Image 1 (tube, rainbow, N blue to C red):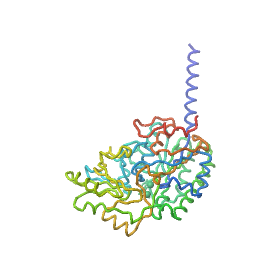
Image 2 (cartoon, rainbow, N blue to C red):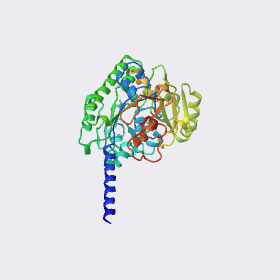
Image 3 (tube, rainbow, N blue to C red):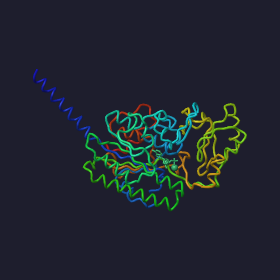
Image 4 (tube, helix red, strand yellow):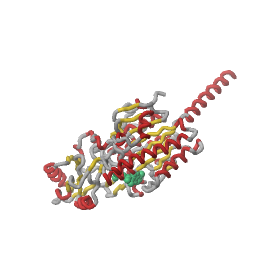
Amino acid sequence: MIIRWLLTLFFCFIIALNGQNQKTNLPYTVLISFDGFRWDYPLRGLTPNLDSIKKHGVHALSFRPVYPSKTFPNHYSIVSGMYPENHGIISNNFQNPFDGETYRMSNEKTVRDAKWYVSEAFWETAERQGIKTASYFWPGSEIEEEYRHPSYFEHYEHARPYNQRIDGVIEWLKLPYPERPHFITLYFDAADTYGHRYGPNSYEVDTTIAYLDGLIAELRNEIQKLEIRDSVNVIIVSDHGMTEVSPDKMVNIEKLLSDFDCIYSDEGPFMMITPQKEKEDEVYQLLKSKAANFRVYKRNAIPSYFHYSNHPFIAPIILVADIGWSLVTNKDFEWMVKSPQRGNHGYEKDHLDMHGIFFAIGPNFKNGYPTGTLWNIDIYPLLCRMYNILPRQNIDGSLERIEFILTDE
Ligand code: AMP
Ligand code: ZN
Ligand code: ZN
C-alpha cells in the first residue's frame, strides 16, 4: 500500500516537473509589421539586417495578403487566420448598412468596439490558454473588453517615436517571469506612409527601407543583452505591398453613375457601391458596359478566390481596379488632382506588387531556409503550433501550408 502511494507521488512529481519545464520552455516571439513593405524591397541592397536573417533564419519569396490588400483587413487576418469576410474587418473604413454606423480605423471609438471583430486574435487564444501577450500597436489590439485584448497594449499613436516602441518591447521582455509576455506585436508605418507620398520607386522609400532595416539591428542587439536571448523568435512581416499610381489613371465612378443615387464606400484600388435596391441590376449593367480599367462584380458572384462575399456589410456591387488605376467619386477626384498620391495598395492579392515580406529567426525557425510565397492567413495556426496551444476551430489558415518552416523539436 505504502509502495503504491509512494509510486503515485513519484509519478505526480515527474508529471508536475514536466509541466513546469514545458511552461518555462515556451518561446518568446516578437511579431513586427513594416506596413506596406513590398516583397522586393529587400532586393535593393539596402537591408543588411534582413539579409542576415535570410542567412540564419527563414525567408519567404513573398507574403500573400488577403483581399482587399489594405492595412486593417490584413493585420487582422495575420493575427486571426481568417479572411476579412469571416473576421469582420472588411476594409479600413466601412459601414453597417443595417444601422448606418461606420467603422473607421482613425476613430478610437470604433477600433476599440468589440462588435466589429467577429473572429479571435492570437492573443485571445493564447491568454485563454495561460500565455501572456502584449502589443505595441496592432489593429484589433485595443478592443475594450478585458478578455479580448493582450495583457499589455498601447493605444495607437501615429507619431510615437520608433525608439520608444522598441524600448517598450524590451521593457516587457525584462519583466519578472510571471509578468513577462511571451508574444509581442510591434508596428511601424513608415514604408507605407512614404510609399503613398513618393511612390515605391522613390529615393524617399529607399531611405526608409534602410532606416527600418537599422531598427531591426537595434531591436536584435537589445534582445542579445537579455538572459532569455536564445528563446526569442523575431518574425518580420508586412501587410501588403505598394504600386505606382498617378492622376492620369483615374476613373470617376460617381460621374458614370450620375443618374443614380448610390452610396460609395472606399476609393482607389477598390470601391463598393450600394444603389437603391430596385436599381441594383441597372447600375450593375451600366458599370459592366463601361468597365474599362476595372472589373465589376455583384457581391454574390465575385470569384470565390477573393473570399469576399460572406460578410453582410459587403455592399451589393464591388469594383476591382486594374493595377495602378484609381476608382474615385467627384470629391476624391478633386482631392487626387490637388494632392496626388504616388503609391497605393488595395489591389488583387495575387498581383505581385501587393505582396509583402516574411522573415523569421529564432529557436523555432529553420536556419538559412528559403521558401516560396507564404500566405498571411497561415500565421495564426503557425503561432498556435509554436506555443502548443489549440487554435480556434474552422479558421481559413492552414498549418500544413506553413509548418515546414519550423524546426522539428
Ligand atoms: P492604409 O490606408 O491602409 O495605408 O493604412 C495605413 C495607416 O493605418 C497608417 O498610416 C496608420 O495611420 C494607420 N494605422 C495602422 N495601425 C493602426 C492602429 N493600430 N490604429 C489606428 N490606425 C492605425
Ligand atoms: Zn498597410
Ligand atoms: Zn497604405
